[in-house]
Length: 394
Image (cartoon, rainbow, N blue to C red; front, side):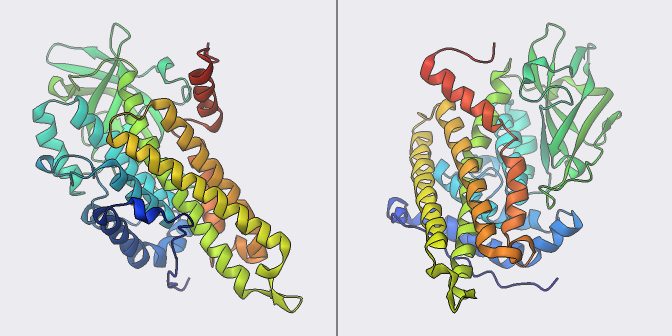
């Protein structure tokens, strides 16, 4: 498949760039330039082959995509939450699988080690994760426990000088090549604890998941623990209970809320350009009312989504963003992106199913994004619980 020039132009109907600092724009434009140069020319082929291009890891580290909000003393970039969101937006504009790789490293591996780890753990792991020398993954979801993680069966037993870890996790991004895994397991009292597992520990394996129609340029697998001896110092000391993994997911969902808007913008940009170039009945299809309706609705929903994630970023910078607010934005952004991808596919006609355009790839990727880190329906119920005070989960 011939490499294509990436001619993406960023839609900004309400001049949101005026709300960003010069640093924000520089960070975003740096990520965008890297995606155009290193990702867009090879992403279609990577998806067709179902391969994650490992050379992306170095570039992701260089643009600050690994732990951008982690302090510089631990190797992070020390940036704010809007910067994190903008990087995720640009990465997912390239491909959801690429953003998944960075989201997991930042919010599901580096964040818990920074927030809940000991100073020794921070110094040991964070600089190597920030530089991409080590890659990480996050073990929460199990074969029988997805939306209800509290039912997990993975467990640790205290054996005096170490813990014995048993269980299995599935649908784990980065697992096939991860050097470290932040794993959530129940102790003998049934309390959920976080523990850092390293590749090479006996009894720890990471079988890859094959046959995916979605996130094909991202490596997905399982985590299997068969009497794995984990040193005591690998336990995250400063967190107990489900609050730990859920706070990680809040950070990741914030990144997804921004990221999915990037996918939506890419689909819109492609559809707009195509509508001006494709001639039918003697005129560009962009001149027909039904095409204009599609494009007008797309840019309206994108603008609403952009305003929502920007405001959420402001709240997150002020430590005022609630989990329910993050849930609403994650659900809205992904739903918006999926709807736009489907409409954009129609504007592209038959070409929309080919790898010549990014539409079908985004659409298939978003079918995973709408499910992972809280399904569309679960996030609806989180909002419902928040506004009524009555839980629909019990």
